[in-house]
Image (spheres, rainbow, N blue to C red):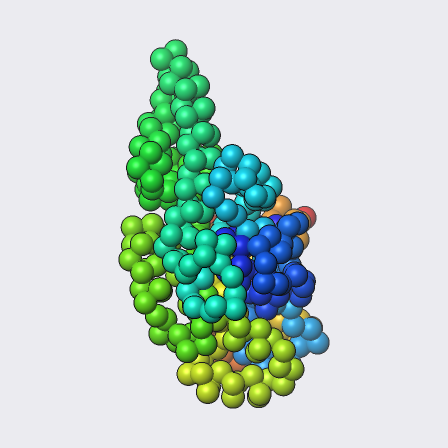
Length: 366
């Protein structure tokens, strides 16, 4: 689907360390500012226990997970909107991403320098926010001037867009990101999406903590939670140092014992990848059989023909109907024949909205 999540933040907050943990790509990670210059791209398998369960049932020849693209972007500093540091490059790179994983340093360590000399994740967040807001304000004011002119000439669509832009301008002028402004209807939501504003991208704040705070967080995390209360954004607690140690372990059992000792059920990397996937508005349906068990990626709200087209464009063009098995029913009855015999096989048409976890088979005619 070519959607990307960008890992952003100030220099030396743990972006590249996390990227190395989640990705097959290896970004340089070191204790100095602007260690990352060119963005690093990694395509990451999305861990999904449902796919593992389906594979255990079907014993297929191939198991193919869903994937998500993660980009490690150069660190940002004050003045980026005016070209300071790697500002222009940073802003261009983030504009190309569909969602943001904003890494905040929430740990004390005198051996790891901070670009501003002290640890304050809320201040760090505001530095990034301010630079993005300044750039968005430029964009909004330029578009608003054109829309107001067109609106006075009788363009109704321009008037609608101008109303939205005015609310964005007010928010930005008061130091709030565009994502705090809620569209009033679907039409306005579509207009908002087409503006491609930096501060309107979905964001997950990733609090990089010390090992002892990986489960419950700390005072720094609490401060971040309070700061993002009105942002319509998510928050994840993770220890990049712990995750880098886990990534070096080849043995699955060893990893699980290590996690158990820390009081964790699963690694932060798993939660981060899954969080990125859902942040992009992506969902999963499955095909399951003796040849292959596969997780397919769709957008939330996609209907059955669009899901069929993910497998092959001809499936969408010639779509007739979809046979749908709910994941829990497949797990209970084990085979398609048993599901059908139990009356649990759904037959759906073109208007069916695919649900996350559906096991599907498409009938088509070309």
